[in-house]
Image 1 (cartoon, rainbow, N blue to C red):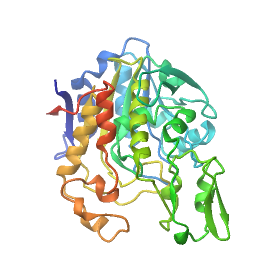
Image 2 (tube, one colour; image 1 turned 90 degrees about the vertical axis):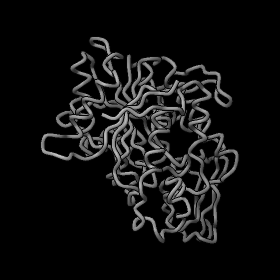
Image 3 (cartoon, rainbow, N blue to C red; image 1 turned 60 degrees about the vertical axis):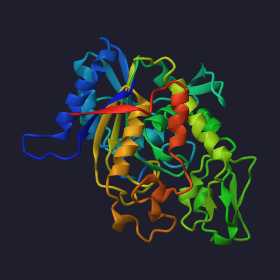
Length: 373
């Protein structure tokens, strides 16, 4: 049976219209209130953006969702997990400061912010699953123990998954730091030392002490490398790249299995909102925001994380690429401009791997029906 995906287009054609009002209507039309009981704690899975990034989902949208949760009797809290890489979100103190800097204060978003895996990313619940690669997953404790969950995802590109949406927000975003490392394990990047300038930016970005500069060139210690891939976009000189082999496919499949773990105790208790706005080539973990691949499209809502991601990709692929934003950029391949926008930025990656494996894990269906609001 096709998954129902509700959709509202971006923009307001008149003064009596607002995308925020339509978002509130979507919340009700999709039936999100049905998952919330009186006084239940509702996790609103967010991404607060890395410091320097401006393309994350605005706290104004979260406020609309938070207000609807409160109207249904729930106790909402905004939450995310700590990162593997150094950045400004790898412990709860820095993470909370970044969230506040980006406008996620109670006065704006209407709910408190809680970092789901604790001060240093070690607060987790081990969830038993029957995955091809993962048998026990480490899900952030505050997400696991929440009574219900609203997953707010920014649909955009990603250097290791091609596209990030609801599945990535569930799998990678709901995992404690040890779970993130488990998913990345084995994906040691490829180093092109001839391109290295010795600038040490990748060294500063690595949270595992795996990188060092020797004789003016970067050296990686595979025994320390977690395979998180965050050094790849940190390099401005194309000296670091992913290993495009079965390991990367395995990472995407592990991510889908972690998504299943995050949903393990949330059957009929989770709703997904995908924001297909500010569609950048890379994720919001980057400390900057690149030019957009396509014009803003809209917002989707569904109980099915697989269907909503597939619908999001299809809408992006139907849109016209903003050619002046991508023409001439190193590593971008315009042969995909008409058929697969995410492969413009990541021509060697396949976004469908995560969706096919999530479907196999019983998370939903790639078949869907669009219902426009």
